[in-house]
Image (cartoon, rainbow, N blue to C red):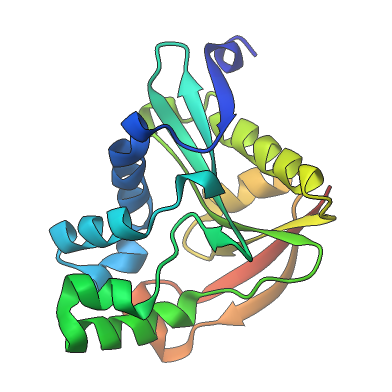
Amino acid sequence: MQDRQRFSIHHGIEDRHIDKALDLFWQAFRQKLAPVLKPEDKALRFLRRVVDPAHAISAVSSDGDLLGIAGFKTPAGAFIGGKLSDICAIYGAWGGLWRGVLIDILERDLSEGVLLMDGIFVDPDARGKGVGTALLDGIAHEARARNLAQVRLDVIDTNPRARALYERCGFVAGEVQELGLLRHLFGFRTATTMMLPV
């Protein structure tokens, strides 16, 4: 527990941490998103355009360094949101159109009484120190503060380490969605919905 005392959990992301947050996001989700959003420089420009720091929980070290983020989605927005016009602004009309169609496949709908997580990631140097668990606790607190009964996330089959963390934190596996032929594009076969009562 000593490591846990070396960081704190905050609602939102400070302006000075946005670039690092987006770099960490891209590192965490590059395998899944790069086939659609590459080249990397355009992907990071797009992410910067659509990021909403208010839809995130951040872990910050006692030295002021960003250690990790847990994003969430509400009817008011998402940690990584945006519209087709945002994609087209970066990739052009045709490039934005086909990318928008493919990204839409990965989107998850909101449900009544449920806070939808929109990605969680921890700086590789901070892993194993309780940051991920603390971020999940922060998300549960966010759900309770919004009078919601559950937190939902989806975990892909190629990330067993993340699934193990979610299970340790009380998430229960539910529906499994098959990606079909698109598995060759996104690099995973299935996504499992996991729920946490709060």
